[in-house]
Length: 238
Ligand code: IPE
Ligand code: IPE
Ligand code: MG
Image 1 (cartoon, helix red, strand yellow):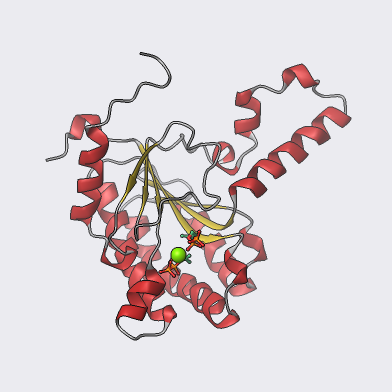
Image 2 (spheres, rainbow, N blue to C red):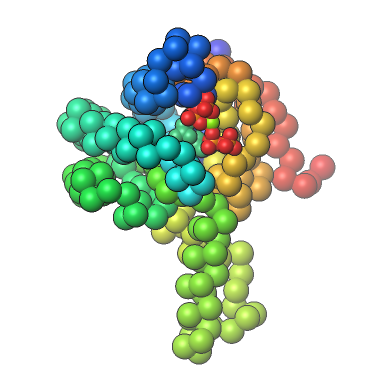
């Protein structure tokens, strides 16, 4: 059983394994992404119910452009379908959706839906659901450095003013007030970060599960939280 008094306030998930899920069933990869989207809907609902405050999911990385245009366009069409079919419910459940990453590089139609979803849920006070799209942690840190360099060149700050807090405030997560994830989950058995939240995950507890993302259920999320609750978080102390 999970301890409701010791919930991780901020949870991040690398939703991996959609392609392998489809391959196992001899289906096209896009069908795996479609199944993954259905799994995500259940996880958002459950996260909201069990009192997680921030759910941050990795949906499309800056490296995922290397995939076939068929797969990429399939993913972006699913985003449109997601907004068209789920925005009402998300709003009703008081979910606030934010997009992290350079999402404006996506096709116009997807960008329009994403902006509609953010505007519509802007003032909601329930779960903050952060979707990372065209997100890469190195790109995020590079952008923060560039913004800070501009401040310095205008004479607004000096090197000594560049604190960890200042840098963090210039990350996508800082702008959207997302706390560092207490728990970071990756599905599908891969044990790497793949350019996700490199700065923010400095002290995250990581849980890796072999379950492929489309098979990830609310029960499996609770199992990951249980594992997190058994960890001893020391933050370098003793
Ligand atoms: C994760 O599933 C979703 C995205 C990266 C968009 P994958 O598509 O990476 O699935 P596998 O790793 O090939 O099984
Ligand atoms: C990470 O998964 C990106 C997302 C889940 C969106 P990948 O499948 O792209 O990562 P690698 O290539 O296995 O490292
Ligand atoms: Mg993968």
